[in-house]
Image (cartoon, rainbow over the protein chains, first blue to last red):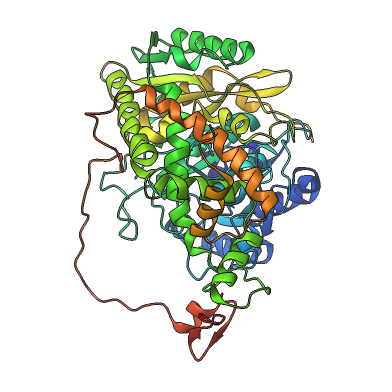
Length: 485
Length: 96
């Protein structure tokens, strides 16, 4: 039994009854990290000293004050592409190996205001480019359910740390599936909010029109608590939306009577394994039993999403990553006689191959003579993909399918061919292109490996996603399973 | 016919300020060619009258009052610089 088997509302009860202290919760994190981190390798940097100081302060607050933040005393892990003042932030890249941020990301500021405790920074694919966390410039994170397998990516450290019980919550980021896919592989709950729901200020930009920060947690209720804290307009991010933030926790009514579910035939077709397909059909039966109905629909442009995504995301990345030039921060080569050589050598020595590949693809797609054929074409197809979702949401409340075509694959299995690795994200990428929110929750096991159910909602309708996910969670016990480590 | 030649890869690498070896140029040419060939399936779609999407939400030109605020302290700004002198970033010679 771990303290992190309790939900945040239960932990708050224990804290108020003085049965536990914030220091106990922080101790639980570092004790578990000491036990399993050697196997899982989820963390790049630990914040132990600061976390213990903060825990003591919060314990004093608990004894003397009456007002508490929504995540009071909760230990949390942060993906290493979200800047934390005074706590090393690397994006798992050698080019930022020594980067010490001078401000906090807005989400981190909000977590601090909500009295959460930062435990450390989590491993990822370099600059969030990847689906297995194998592209980290520093270490290999392993899936807690099977150490020979990947945790997914790019937020692999975040999902693995939560699954391994090292922290009850983590933040990830999702550009093409990077929260939902690792959540599926590690058997935890991961939400990519609507584009604009959560401020991106302080998230090191990969593809600015697609990136969103979101929570990875054990339960849907906990996920709603974290989203509550990090959501909302931010003057520092002009793409954050001026849309009211509803009370997400109160949306968890357990009632989905009359809910209309769309199941795209493209999400259960070619490339999706039979076992994953079966898990999703079983999940739909559970939801039917709770009063929902489902029908097959079509998102006809789904098969074009992958190509569209790689052109657009790489183009945006090629511009965003121009800032890493060895001048203002990060690594600088020792082997350069002039400025041009310094730029080129610094970037070549600092970036890994996947990052270089995408920068070059993006530079090519944006270059004179190719812009219309590749970049602009992809922007037009993006419109068609977005319209597919709008058409379905005219008649249905949510779209449901698998999160990934298969459960977690073996380490090294897909590293030799970039396109094979990319194909992992065919079911998550359309959601980013349309900007709608999506969650992955555990819906079964295949040979001991978790399977993720993806629930997609309308723009800014995270409440309905949470309501459906929570109702399913109450009716099943997949979320209570824990890996043996 | 390949979509991207080794010479083009070297040109793109230069534009992206990346130094690549001959061996890397060959590898990237092969990989980028496969990705670009895959991406050309988009040509199956007639998009003549489809407007491009650069942003998914219906918002544009987000404005704010132009009120001066304090910038970052110089010490913070230079803290992560690989090299600096007299309050400025220092770089190798621009001209030989």
